[in-house]
Length: 246
Ligand SMILES: NC(=O)c1ccc[n+]([C@@H]2O[C@H](COP(=O)([O-])OP(=O)(O)OC[C@H]3O[C@@H](n4cnc5c(N)ncnc54)[C@H](O)[C@@H]3O)[C@@H](O)[C@H]2O)c1
Image (tube, rainbow, N blue to C red; front, top):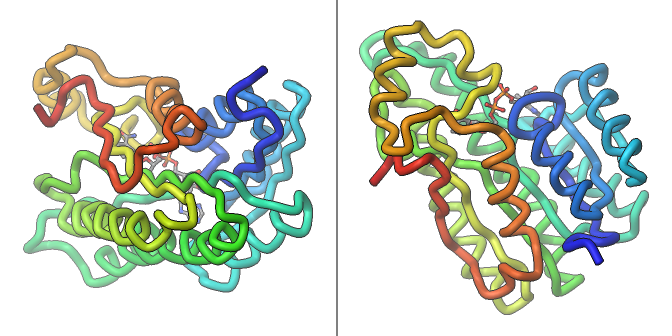
């Protein structure tokens, strides 16, 4: 039997990059997945890939920064599938600038999507999962939460996700809902593809394992935390970065 046979999952930001690979990995393990994000066309492609594996998958255009849309995502899943077992809060953006040049718009936009957006879906899912007395919530933070030049907004949002994860883990523990965070290191996706070559090379030189991670390597860690094998793990922060933060 597959690890996630028949489980119902929601993945945010599932139209490309890490979210797309996470949705695929969960579906390979047997889950039915609601794939949400900003662009319906790319979400439809992800959903078709999952359906080709024999899973149910529904694409849903949802801006997680908008509270009512985030709640709509969770309520839709409940109506369509009758329950919600796994939530992966993956959607995120960056608007990098040095602190002395960062605009308030750049600050607000990143906090609104990465931190408030994660709160919005997490809160809606918590309401459902408490009643079910079962759930797995995996929040995608970043190794940048420890501080990174040019990323004051992004770093603060990702650090906020760690606090949110630990608080939610404590509050939901008695209800058998686990909440964990994954901190990807430096992973090859659209988010990182425009980094100048000299910065890319510098980043790679800091990775003890010597290479840029793949979306699959993040998705495998998500699958573990979403599975019953991780039943006694909650409130943890799992670095998946080839040793980047050692
Ligand atoms: N790529 C990396 O090296 C890396 C490292 C650490 C953490 N992360 C985190 O991993 C997650 C995925 O990153 P990625 O590299 O795949 O990025 P990406 O830019 O390729 O994908 C992000 C996805 O989020 C969606 N999204 C953006 N704003 C949204 C909103 N308001 N509502 C719903 N969806 C929204 C986008 O449409 C996109 O599909 C992000 O949270 C990112 O911060 C990435």
